[in-house]
Amino acid sequence: MSLYKELNGVSIDLSDYADEALPEEQKAGWQRRVLRKIKREKAPRRKRRYAGYAAAIAIALTAVFSTAAVTFADDPMMLRNFIEKGLGLQGFNKQGSSFSEYKTELGITVENKDGKITLEEGMINDGYLLLTYTFTRPETEAVFFNTDIPHPVELWMNGEQVTSLSQLIGGITAEGKRKYTLIAEITLPEIPDLKTITFRAAFNYSEPMENAVYPRWPVDDPWTFEFSIDQEKMERSKTVIPIDKEFNSEDGAYSRFVKLVTTPVSTTIYFEGEGYFKTFKLVDETGEKIKTVSTQGPDAAKQFKFRYPPIDLEKKKLFIVLIDGSSPPFEIKRPK
Image (cartoon, rainbow, N blue to C red; front, side):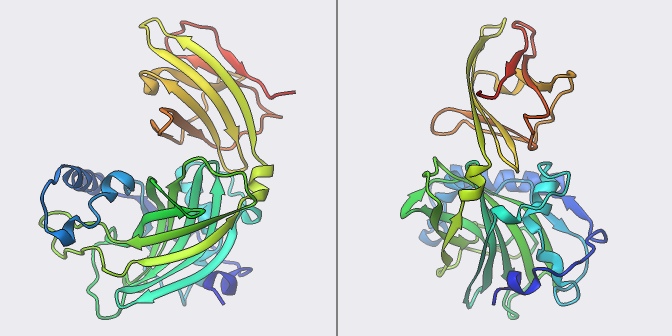
């Protein structure tokens, strides 16, 4: 029985566990680390083995860890609604909604001499795969800095390897930093319109930063999982609104708004254009700006994604407003 199944249904108050974002100096360290991987031309074979992942799969700088000194035995419900909690920290789930009906319980464990990883649960949301997993270090291994942990480095979807962007959006440490529960959010290419999507994921370490006190290289035997995620309920709850609206700002920058996608988890505008970060804002009928949670792009289709909290378009009207005022506000309307 998986840890997720054993703990489901137990109630716990998580208010005592503070979460904090990765400090700026640690973010800068990760940036330098990725740049070194991209620039490095020559390295020992063992070091080069995972160098390609710097471009294919990058660890983002939004990893969040609890500062509570606890053990899983003392507070077993750390895993309950863990994806929801991570999305809340990002800004997608401020209301504390439950997404249980959209998640798939996994409970798969792979263990080797370098430690043990258990995939707890997963969910697909509008081009993203979210995975909760628990990593336990072997007792013989020294405790490293808390960002030095295995994460998804390779991914296959329905039998085909895909190039992905991965970030850790939340986590909790326990048992003297020997056990971690984390959430990985993996960007996916176009997802087939199927009830169930099958995956194969390999977890490993990234190359260590130069001058690391405790350098931790990728292991020879990655933690590899095969699993399936049911996306039927999420797909039924998703609304896609074509926009196909072009704008040209006063400075000549071209913009095209492709579509808006709403799900119970998020709202996303797909956008093509120049100077994307300062071109427009999304507002409601009162003129209040909708806060952007994250942006991403360009992807293979040269599109950017602007991601917002979930918005009920039955209750709220949305307008695209160009920052320079060169065009009147444009209402995003649901298809009739």
